[in-house]
Length: 455
Image (cartoon, rainbow, N blue to C red):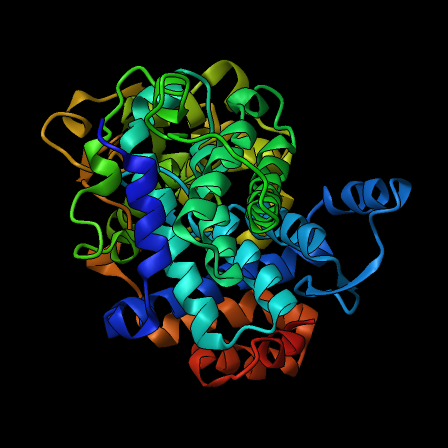
């Protein structure tokens, strides 16, 4: 290990808008818009939102501030806005995913960037620069942690590495020095937390801990701005992130080709509102259903082969076969697969079919197994093998990657349509204006001119 914390801090400090390639800036805007669509819809529909709002009220944390919570007419204090936007944007499980690190970069980074951007009167260009800085830091730390080992230890990388990404974005907007950024990362190391225990009962921890990562990054950067002394070597130190959170650290991945290769361009988007490990199988099931004119009564058995990470998150038959909660459904290969095979599509509104007898009966025909072909010689862990047995024989497909990865990234029209489908029920006619504002964020002298359209 060789001063990874200081190297990342120096990168964030020196990063300039004009030095970021145009395609990276465009991708950052699309990813931001995609995330905000989920946040806006979740403000109205996520079942965990009332509990969070009541908690804030009970603790007198619901005071008015200058920061936007998207889809909410009220403005909030910056740290609370980061918390709510992070939790809301991750609630539908429809937000972006970086395959190599198996984390959702926008969920901690974008809320931190907007909260602080509004706080300091930053321009759209400043906020875009901060978002790219945050993406690069959290994705690279996720790579260094090694997602398979990190998951095996029971950690959720979006919440752990994501705290550092949020601190990077917030620190960039505060104009922190290199030493202050090191201190912010030092505080982040004490706040990086996120457990996979939510998988057992479909708990709401997952979305909350990602919101907390956004908030904690803002707090870490604010402490550093006020000369708080944070730990040094937070990433590589004896008790640092890579020592405590993984058994297979790759510190070189935290800084490899830093400033030359942009991890931002490796972030994919979701076509379905569920765990990314279910998506390749859903793609295959929908395609096979159409190709073979399959109906549920023709199906005798379905076997889904996944990477071991996918088994950990979505494939435990004892707890995942018949989920009863939305989180349970989001992390059930059985439910999402049966739904896709039954109707040939899958969207947010389809969670109304949780507990549907027809879906449960079809899910009983599914088996989920580990398939070594999805691990050996592959960079990304999100592929799937699908075998469907009918009276006509066995039909099989192997999908190396789900749709929405960089090699099949949707065009701008498709991304805008996904946003509008989610945001229109909340923003009504303002949805189009807000989408246009985010996609031209660089033209705003004050980012608040754009964010006010999303309330």
